[in-house]
Length: 89
Image (tube, rainbow, N blue to C red; front, side):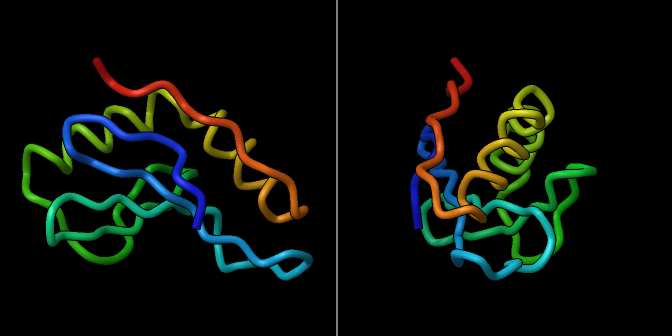
């Protein structure tokens, strides 16, 4: 699963399956022993959980980079390599 971004101890990744639609467009966020799955459009937690602070950081980051997340989703679904996304600073 390619890593797209890392910030404040949070890791953002996306799964992919070539030529197979892998559910709805989404990404995975990991922080320590916590994991959450977020829909990309609209940005919405669909499974798992993160601590409140990390959840707010992930959601803010995702809103800033929603177009890039969707572009990377399309790349991965077509068997291409995703582009890194800028972290929060």
